[in-house]
Image (cartoon, rainbow, N blue to C red; front, side, top):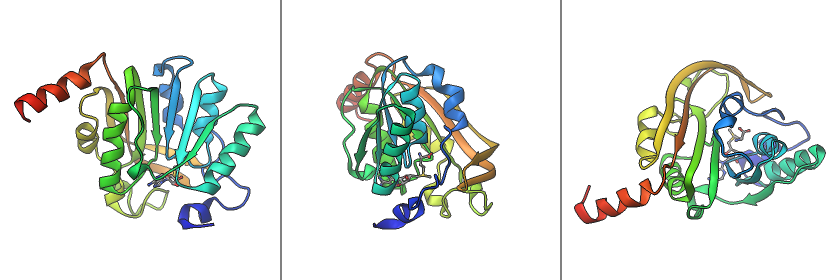
Length: 215
Ligand SMILES: C[S@@+](CC[C@H](N)C(=O)[O-])C[C@H]1O[C@@H](n2cnc3c(N)ncnc32)[C@H](O)[C@@H]1O
């Protein structure tokens, strides 16, 4: 076993519980029904398994072998299949126009890796594809109710707007809400929430124009 996340996920209990994230539940109706969904930094699989149970075709990526082992156990216990892939998301190509939805729930990577991951998400969405994201904001650090200890691992609405440039942002806010998810998230938290869609061919034409005309 290696790394802090493997150690955190060791044992039988699910660190963030087995129920899906509340913001994902609120937004799930915006995902194309029955579509192919990629869950980023999915850990022990609570969101991926819920999506699979709701009829989506789900792939979950994470660096933690322990997390993915438990995601597999959870999927089997619910009688659904999830494609589990172990990788470093700071350094993984996510494909081109191949996902109907990307779900990133508390996918806190160091800043440069996160930026690259989010740029790859824009490229990887099919036209009409939707991103749903919730993460802790810098104001969360020090509250003791969960989330990364380092503000550099958190996200602001401004950063998300930049990192998802090329998508239409239909919903973006920072707010406080009770985040009660297992023993990992235990109270009111400062979060950013985003829903964005890749409208038909918008990304490629803007990128091409920028190549021709400059920024
Ligand atoms: C706060 S947990 C969230 C887990 C899951 N999304 C959930 O909400 O239950 C953060 C996850 O990010 C994963 N992670 C962190 N850095 C990563 C990286 N570079 N590549 C892949 N996964 C990473 C960790 O292994 C961990 O499972």
